[in-house]
Image (cartoon, rainbow, N blue to C red; front, top):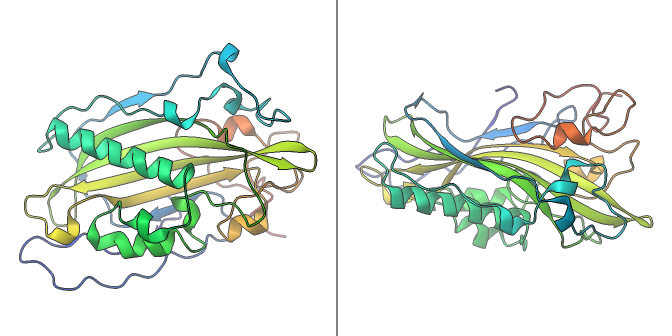
Length: 293
C-alpha cells in the first residue's frame, strides 16, 4: 500500500514488561497532492486465517428521508442507512481467539467508529480511553490535531452538518502475527460516511471513505500496556470538502469546482467512485484539492 505514514508506539514486547513506552511523534500532515492518507502504526508479519464479513445492503428507496435541499440526491448515499444500521457480523472463534473475544472486539471497533464519526465531542482523552493503555495518549493527541481525520470527523468552527448522517460498509476479522511473533486479532472496517451541510441556500454533501485495521493482541504473553484495542492502519479518502479546512483536519463543504475528491470525465466530483466500499482509488491529478499548481 503506497504512501504509508508511520508513527505511534509499537506493541509492547512479551514479558518481562517494558517499564516505559517511547513517546511517539504525531504522523505528518497529509501532503498537498494526496487525498488517500494511510496511517500505519506497526507492520503486519503474516496473515494466518480467513476473514468473515458482513455488508450493509442499501435501504429501500421508499424508506429514505432526504435532508433539506436533498444533498444526497445523485450520490450513492441516497440509498444508505443511518449509523444505527451499521451492524457487525456474527462472531466465531478464529485462531486462539474465542467467540466472545471476537464479539467484544467487533463491538469495540464499531463503538470507536460511531464515537469518531457520529458523536465526536472533541474530547481526545475520552476517545483515547477506548484503546489499550500503551496507545491512549498518542490517540488523544492524534484526534485533537491535524491528523484527526484518520479517526474522527470534526467540523470547522461555525460549520454544522445536519443530523442525518448516512453510512455503508463492512466488517471483517482475521488473525495476524505481530513483530514479536504473537497472535493479534484484526478487525478491518471499511466504511463510507456522508454528511449534509447547509451551504449557500442548498445542502451540500461531504463523503469519506475510511478503512481502519483495529488490532487486539492476545492477552497471553502481552503486558498490561498492550492489552486492548490498537489502531494498526487508517486510510481516508474525502470528496466534496473545502481543501484548506481539510488540510487542517476539519470537514466543511467546498465549492463544487474546487472541492476535494476524484473527478469524472466532465470534471464533476465522482461520487460513485468515492461511494464504493473497498480500497480508495489511487491519488491522481484530477483531485483539485491536492494537485500541484
